[in-house]
Length: 405
Image (cartoon, rainbow, N blue to C red):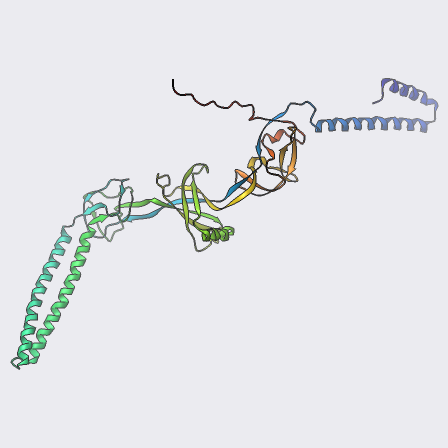
């Protein structure tokens, strides 16, 4: 910038410029104006460069850092799903009658074969008794007919009885034999109807809310449910994945059992771990997804039919991949980058390429090396060359709790 003395001399020269020609005076003035504008621009550029660079001795920026590391990283596929009972039925009456007793309570855990409901069995017991009596009657008649067949066969051999009489008693014996077979069928039907009076659990499960009480008259022809029962251990869940992953899932199933994890709606709380059972035989054309079904032991009843879950399918485990925390990777105009910490505790912007990000760790394919330190939190206050301070380093560590006297 011109000094005060130089500016004064310029003013004096300009004051005396009236003695010069007008063109010379205008040229001097334009030259002085250009000098002033150029000087101002140089000062502005210098000040701008000074602001772009970190000032020497400025306070370090507190950040959180992490190491670039090689790990065996599981490759999880994520999908939304819902839980469904492994088996679920609505128990309905198969005979008409009055309910005498409900042997279980709502919400009770039952085993296969446990008695649930008793329908009045007396009419069906009477039908069974009548069928048994009819069979005994037919058996007595058959015994007599068989004796007649033997008797008339001997007489016909001596020509003491007609051949026609022998054939008549033989036909009667066959008729009674068929009647006994019919009696056996009626007895089995009567026994079956009698057994339907005692409703038992078809599998291990949990009883739901019943819709009938003792004294209710039920009919087999009506669609009235006695009570629902659902099998919760084990339990199933269905979820969907994009159709593009169909080949990868098939390959994983060909290698062996495929692990599936069920998480709560917060996607953090692990509910249970199971295995993939199968996948649907068609792709949903409306959504472009494939439905898969997994089974879980559900030992603690943390999965419930109708519950929505976040399902994760373990496609494979990638050995020794280079990873950084997902929060270390930033988006810039030129692409993805991270701030790498130098030995002098300053940072440099490093462009990176990644293959995938599971929300916790990012797999880096180019730009970083194992053992480097990157900034995880606090990037908003950083620029190339900024000096940093690890925010975690100054925090006091919790001392172990002392016990005893």
